[in-house]
Image 1: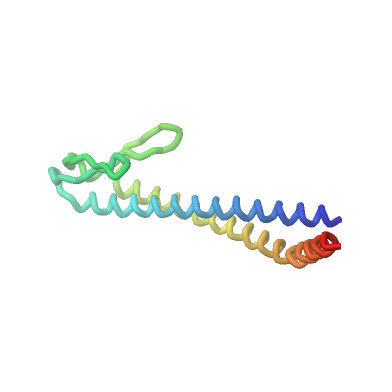
Image 2: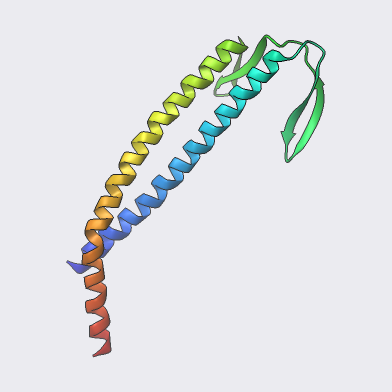
Length: 138
């Protein structure tokens, strides 16, 4: 019985960690979508021929010239891309962010459930640990 409680507690702890990591990943994706949306809004304001810096990774940039400030090429999944107007692309980004917000809410519900189970099991686990420690002293 004691082993079962400890095993259940450990499983919930592991699930909590996994859920926290999932929430962090969702938060990162939401932040990236917002940055992209803001970047597109800024590009819309620029004129043809304006120079911009394009990030290529690891803090490195290329100088580029705006050739078209009305359309952008966006990923539509699985290495497929489509050309869209900036307002369409922004709308798509906002829709994806809303989907991620829903997923985040679901993960938070799961995390709250797990937290309540851990809270319920903690006194039992502490009791088991105390019992084992007192038996070890004998």
